[in-house]
Image (cartoon, rainbow, N blue to C red; front, side, top):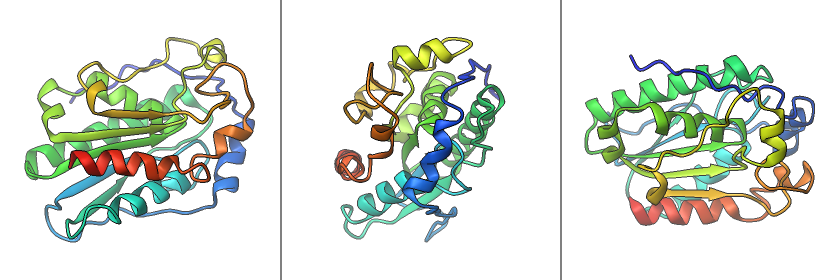
Length: 214
């Protein structure tokens, strides 16, 4: 069933990322769908140490998207994974769960437009599944929105292997947002910027992008 070969992100600011969910709030959003097959579905992976659900960034993104799609229904699936500092096992677990759900949705609800999303470690989860899912699944994915995607020189220096990246098949439908000075996705800066995706309006920006593709 297309298991993920881990390319671990071990050591990626294990201590600092504990601040993420506390700063953003413990907002969660359980899996929910108004009908057996919704018009669209957001599959979102939360950041490191956030409690189960979609997390603060994910919640803001989903709320903004729902406000922009008129009467269309938007279901939500919160990726079920540890989101711990043990990146070598946490990221592959998230990728396996997300991939299985996306493939199942594409098969059982072929008209549902899927939106992939992730924040921080969750962004790495989404990077990974775009590289590992069968190519035909991409036809069911309308948009990808990632926030604070680990790809800086600093992030690479802490990784035990190459960091995952969005597959070329998905790049045209992806919005990859990085707050200037975010130490995880840009060279230089601090962890403070890594916590500002809601405050800077980037979740709204990503929702506008995704809505335009549904």
